[in-house]
Length: 367
Image (cartoon, rainbow, N blue to C red; front, side):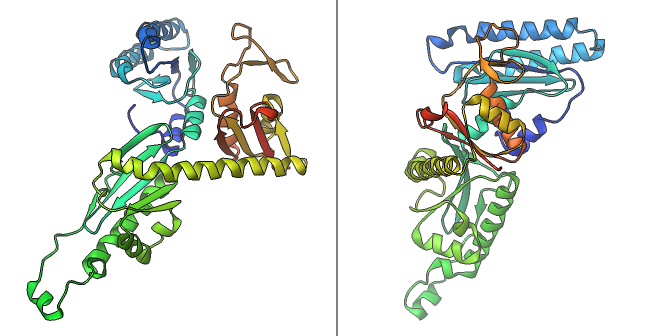
């Protein structure tokens, strides 16, 4: 995976390309023995993609050679040893990208003018990524985390870490006043905290996510005084000594707060659905939700974490289908997530069983 899966990255992936934009999707496995055949299946899929490019009369000779070469390069970058639940390879004239996903995808090869991104969109929505700002009086670091991945240190496009200039100890001043004042009252430190605030604001503007702020109590108070970061964070965690990590300890500090936030968010979604049902602004089941999303009427879509289903369109409704049927759509849930986000709706994933009485997928309607 070349870069974090962010709204900006998704927007770039979804822009039109010069034909052919090739998408290769493969469900992968994290553990033995299920992962034993992933390498063979991947090579077979890539051969299928190359043959499709080679035999397409709309593809020029130069683009054919280019795209087939891009697919070969992408294969060399795939790391199946550390595979997650899905793999997406995209190739077009002059470019290729490899994405590892914490969500299963259907096995597919597609040639079009855009990449097939709906599975990435759904993976991003389900993963619920967040930022962690960990800081002390000397340094502030940024960390990227999510429900399905451990914390990783991030540079925020080169803005982090932010370090305070070295403090000059003044023993004569200490002798005159009798003690050492709080370092957080020092103007150099406050300047440092303002720099942290500006850097954090820039990161959130480029990639909006929930933010956790971790530091000792006095540090949190000082940062709160110089800007909005602490006040706008989803939670502040008063624990010092973690500004430089390690990731495992910082992850433990954040995990409990994130679990509580998730439980509250799921409860709020279920409450929204109950209220929508009462005022006749509710859709339940894949067919009703799909129709409402297509009409742009949805404000919120809730989907059970593990829900996937295969359907076909009979002209009026989506009906259950087997994967082998002509016109079968085995990633309809991910299509719904992408379409909903395209129309400005919120997409939330809830634990399996949470929507059992609504067909595992439900929506709050705007009208």
